[in-house]
Image 1 (tube, helix red, strand yellow):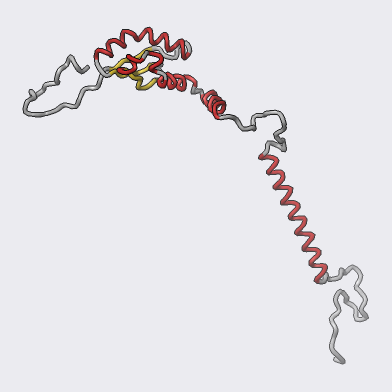
Image 2: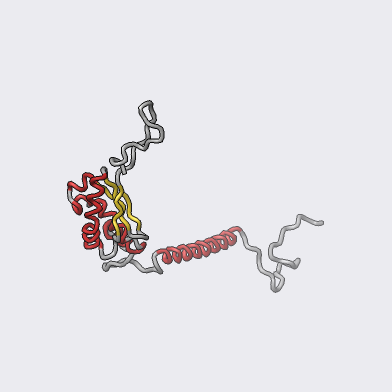
Length: 190
């Protein structure tokens, strides 16, 4: 060996010329340019994918303009009314409104002693509890009139029957002055 060998990048011949069909090896600057180009293409592809996702979320790229559409915000009242209509809750919601307006429908004196408990949607029956048997009897006599008034307010056939319940019996007290097997005064409770 006559001297130090110098590396020949991209050449295969001893005279320093390139071999036909061979490509030169990229240097540091060239590698940086290739990496930058690849990163830009990847970022562009990610950006296009993100933009497509964003347009899909917005409804295919449509944007809300000056006119109203279904995507615009709604006031609370119309939103609740729309939800009730979509779910088919019109009758239960109407009967719930009756329970809130009970004193207006039956009158103040009846409302003090009788209150609606629940509504059975399947049988269309309104259950009412009274605080005494006298008021329960009075409300049973008024039931056909109340059914007509409720159906006028809520829509025909919403309430078919009013079931009136008297007061619940008090708990049985056992003590020295009770007769065994006694149910108490039967004419007051029940």
